[in-house]
Length: 357
Figure 1 (cartoon, rainbow, N blue to C red):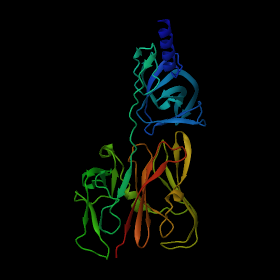
Figure 2 (figure 1 turned 30 degrees about the vertical axis):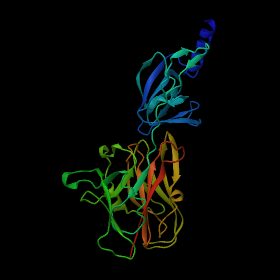
Figure 3 (figure 1 turned 180 degrees about the horizontal axis):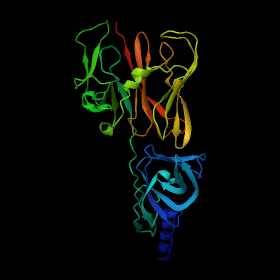
Figure 4 (figure 1 turned 90 degrees about the vertical axis):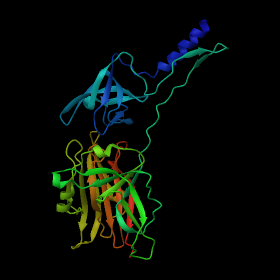
């Protein structure tokens, strides 16, 4: 019996040794739309331990480890625990849900039942892990007639959303987003020698673009300001020396261009052209070279901005660039990614429309 009690004590000790060490623990919720990062030390320069998404629940110590102020929001560094990982986070974007007498150690559900085996050994049932979130994959289309490219890459089985201009007749100021069905049909009238298809939807209205994903997203509830007027007034190219303000606080996203113009005209000769997306991420400035990642600047050396808007609701705009050539238009989708340290967006999808004649 003493042997069994001893083993039981050891088993329970091992099960609890990873607990956060707090005199008093708090149950908190992340309220920053873009989520937050847990760091190894109470410093913005410390190594990132993990990313904690918006609306996640975590355990935090009531004890603080220094103060900090960001965008007039004053807060403190706290020791925290999330999904089995320990670290420190700024509490300026946390909401306290309540006190915890016994801090949770992980986001997994542990079965603590212990049984005495015939040989007198202790058997502890393994933990049941919470299923991991499936990664979102993206596809990009524009509705078109007489498409002569490869149609095998078009998957009508994805969940497709059409993005439409604002409803000006009813005073609308935001893009309209609808679930649609994508239809790929042989073109009734050919314009070239290749096999041609019409890529359309079940809606009569033509969309700005179509976004296909592998899981349901709350896009239809999003309120995204229509930027069409800005694109019409400014043009879709950013010349060296120009800068666009894409968002306000707290991310302050800007898209700017550097380089030199060696000649004038609709397709000027450019040297060292670079398009940079800059902003604030997790309280730190980030500058991302879009030209390098796009790797396709079009015939005139300058990609055009086809569309931008905050689809994910994290104050970082998704962007579609189009690289224009005489014989084709190549569209590239960039999507915000909160898991990256030194980047604001990541390239997710391509769509090329060739001229078939």
